[in-house]
Image: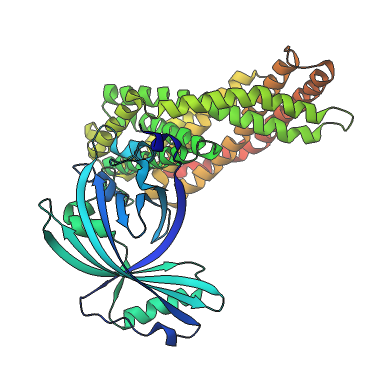
Amino acid sequence: MNRAEQTARPHTAREVEQKFRVHGLFTIPDLSTLPGVSAVDDLGVAELESAYYDTDDLRLARESITLRRRTGDDEGWHLKLPAGGVGARDEVRLPLDAGDVPPPALTALVHVITRTAPLRLVSTLRTTRARQLIRSGDHDAGELVDDTVHVVGADGTVAARFRELELEERHGGPLIATVATALTEAGAVGGEFVAKVVRALGPNATAPPEVPELPVPRPKDPAHDTLVAYLSLHVRALRAADVAFRREPADPEAVHQLRVAARRLRSGLRSFRPVLDRPWAEELRAELAWFARSLGDLREGDVLRERLEHHCADLPPDLPATEVKLLLAEVLGGSVADARTRVGELLDDERYLALHDRLVRAVAQPLTRPDAERPARDVLPRLVEKAWTRLDGAAQDLADDSPDAEWHAARLAAKRARYAAEAVAPVLGGDAKAFAKQIEKITEILGEHQDAAMAAAKARELANSDHASADVAFALGVLASNERALVHAARAAFADAWPNVRRTKWRKWMET
């Protein structure tokens, strides 16, 4: 790594733009005559060259991700990531002096997509760009870019040529829609969003991602289809959370979503176990369990610190709440920072990347038993019923004086039942969704119970440690008592809610 790579920090900008296909003789209408447009400034013409990098199977392009090195106008290294919504992307940028090959600071962000596949130059585009700034009063509403693009082959010759317009929002507003309408009325073809390099690379770049987004199966379709759709949904969620963590490691939500996706995948493999090859499913579940456990210190540390700091506000005014917060920041903050570093290293671990290879294969071709070919409406209800039976057994044994461990076991059973119900609800419809909503109520109560129990234990531990002065130790003891009160409140809430959740009407759809 050279000095520039060591010091450069990626800069991210959100762009929202619409693209329009036009022919070579297309004439842009006079935008200055449109209502709401105060002026159209000609920003001139620029030449630029963009070298695009991808894997041999174009994994980035197939995920609507582009990585390029641009010279000329708007020079730099640019990684563009989908940001939700048509035409919305986050552009992560580094200067050209980051190197002549894709810089690690950018490639690391998409490592879960590329994994061990090397990046190579896949296309070079030379563009002549004419720009117009569209103004509305004192504001820049948007920018219209008219690009004539030459696709350059490996031998330096022009292999293809096309023209397109880009309408990028700045302050946006209804004026952008007015401009877009004027362009389409003049003959521009909008309503699609395809990156230039994707157009240049052809059909292979528009192939489905290696983990595709799948439609919801029908009740009469094989149960296999529901399994695959479920796996695809949560593998994609795991990847999205991976990229989010790499971009913002300090965001607690990113590691939470990583853990949730791993747990949903593991729970789904358990719920679908009767239609799966048992050794295959258990091996994959074991790897997912390893990964989820590896995230535990960070996720639990984040939750504990946030909860205890928040509940310091409930301490009596004569207790040193500020000093307690400082201690929490020192002790828990340090352990959370260490855990965050370990998670960052974990995401580049060979075992973790190999897990993603296995998940890709699981979506493409899961190992199933013959029952997986039977209709979903005949197979899926009994899979949820099994999860419900385990939950019912665990919940029936609970009492107000039961150990925390038993309540935690019931929480895990509730989450498995909820995940099982949510896995089949899109296919089986309203009754399954209603059942899932009932189980969700229980998981939230039991989740609060677990968080309060862990917070009480941690506050008590810190009170008895060498870190706390006498006054701070006393305050931490009060905090622990308050958390135990919340534990018992959660137990009472569960006792109130459980009889309704257990009503037979929520489970009649399982009787097939």
